[in-house]
Amino acid sequence: MGPSGPIFIGDKMKYIVAGTNRPESRSLALGSYVQSIYKALGEDVELFSLEDVGVNELSAPAFGNAEGQGSQMRSTIEKINHSEGLIFIVPEYNGSYPGALKYFIDHWDYPASFEHRPIAFIGIGGRFGGLRPVEHLQGVFGYRNAYMFPDRVFISNVWDVMEGSEVKDETIQLLLKAQAEGFQKFVTALKSQNLIPT
Ligand SMILES: Cc1cc2nc3c(=O)[nH]c(=O)nc-3n(C[C@H](O)[C@H](O)[C@H](O)COP(=O)(O)O)c2cc1C
Image (tube, rainbow, N blue to C red; front, side):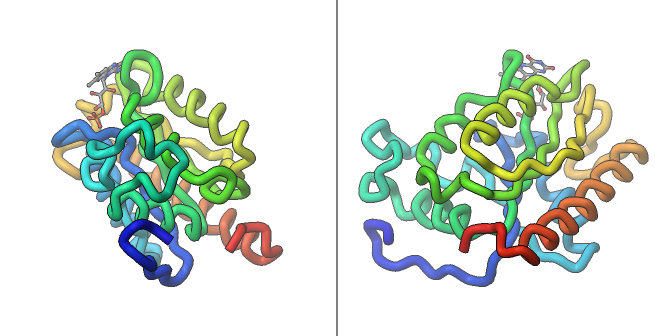
């Protein structure tokens, strides 16, 4: 329970995390494209922008401390704790993932937010398509015992591939759709054995 009272937890859902708070980020635009893929597959998936979840209002005393977190951050973390899967859009910033994303993650609850949480990864960047930031983030989630979906998607020279929230490259469109279909099956299989925490 957060400082502002009980938080409504609905049905188990998947969430997309756009991994930066940079205004007008391509990660957020791609997040809404990925959201539309899941919608076409019959699933409503919520999209988190780090601009909106309260990451800018966080302070050091709120690390792992529910009472020190604003209500927006708290309700986001509660949603993550009860999610059936997270899809990360991970942009490359200086050879890794953005500091804002690590700052966000460092406010999550351990182990509830991480342990046995199914995660899918999409990298974006220049020449290497976000390979480095995805692998760095996988190091964090591997350490924290998440279930990582193996089929990652990397988008090189993302500025050539995207126009607004549209993906122009047909191969990337197909890869993103295949990942979404595979991640749905991955989560369904884990759920069938009660392997995702409630
Ligand atoms: C602060 C910053 C650092 C970046 N560093 C890299 C980098 O090291 N390697 C790379 O391939 N692209 C780099 N880029 C390009 C980004 O990956 C690309 O612009 C991407 O769209 C960023 O995601 P965003 O639009 O969601 O912020 C950098 C961009 C920013 C803003």
